[in-house]
Length: 126
Image 1 (tube, one colour):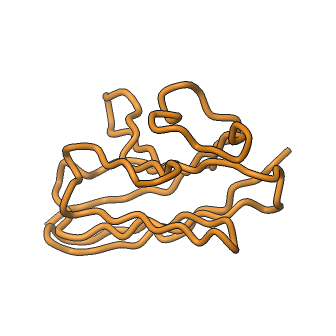
Image 2: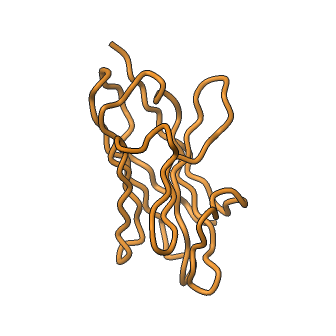
């Protein structure tokens, strides 16, 4: 069982920033793909950022405000969130799935993830 260690959630005012971090407790596979999801109260969970081979996906609602960065050596995925808005409220989850022959195809976040973190709460309120 792989444990994903998330950190960085909290409460900020609109326009503020937070940085989320995610790291697996162990190197569970020779190649794995990571993504960040969020779930707002009363809404379905959605992918907000996914690191695929050759690029990073961002949901339209966070483009230009969120930046994901992957440390391939440490196998971590951070999410820098700037200019936070009330609609960014929710629980943010890190998730991972085994890569296919060392390759993370674009869109992997839509086809099921193998392991999920427990989630960190992000609250934007004035």
